[in-house]
Image (tube, rainbow, N blue to C red; front, side):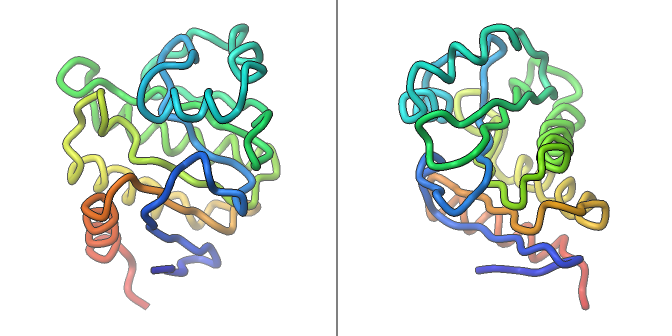
Length: 179
């Protein structure tokens, strides 16, 4: 389902973050060293090829809440924006650090003429952030940023499961401004 706010389309789909060929950029749920790993980071690095890790090396380490941008290498996108989300229960304050990931990713997209960007559900895998709470932070942060976006016109949440899509869409419907 696609929603439009402030001239930006916002959608939640079930999909593989590495298979978003119609998006200028995808977001990586990165680790601090920006290396291949498990989950989203491993999938993105495998799909992008070894050039991605080589380009990432001088940018590491990053701290929770931070984001950096690279080329997408063998992925069908122009860029990968790498965000280090908080580890739930360890990195404090979790909600502010997670919101910073989404804000910084959108700022980097704007600075690099990215018209479309796909996010995974940051920090909800191995980092243990409860899915509903993470969706609330993600959607509130993205909705808050929409009026400031000049270049970004499409935002997609490419999510792992139908449950993840349902949670994100429900939260979006609860938080979205009414017309």
